[in-house]
Amino acid sequence: MSTIKAVNKLFLFRIEGEAGDAWKVAYQTDASTSESRSYDSNETKDGTVKAAGAYEASHSLTSYLKAEDTYISKLKGLVRNADSRLEVWGIDRTDINSEEPAAVLPGEYSVDVVTSVSESAGADGNVEVSIDTEVENGIISGEVEVSAALKALLVRVSDEFEFVQPTTAG
Image (cartoon, rainbow, N blue to C red; front, side, top):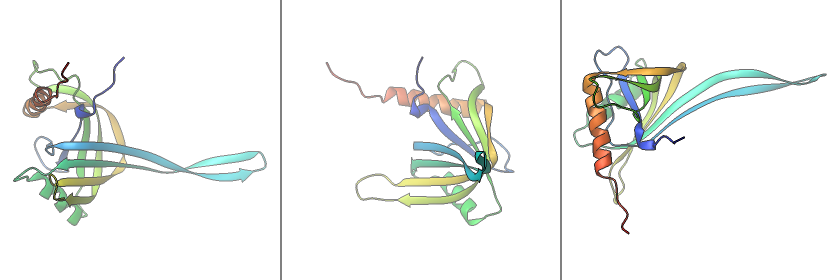
């Protein structure tokens, strides 16, 4: 049994209705998905009965701002234009095979509204960007088909991560 390394969990995006591959926001440092459902309690003579409330889900992503980045401005545009939606794929690239031209990876898909994009520019580091979305109609689990071009990017990112791993002396 093994665990999934956090570096292998990534979000891919595409504005709903756009043609072409999904894209990856560079330098992702933290990603999370939250799902919840509230329940109302009703007392009866036989005990408490629970009634399911609304399902809610959201995604949150933090990354460093890449110089000359075009994707963050697209995401900011979705906050300003409430009519547009964002397709979100959460993927696990643990078992990506560099031999095959394309890949099928485990993941999840949703259509979201972008609720906030914020930048933080402290004096002691890089500019951080936080992106929050809310899911419409639920998250679908399954397999995500990744094109050859996008797969090449994911393999390159994996190779770069392996290259820069710190070593311990002794």
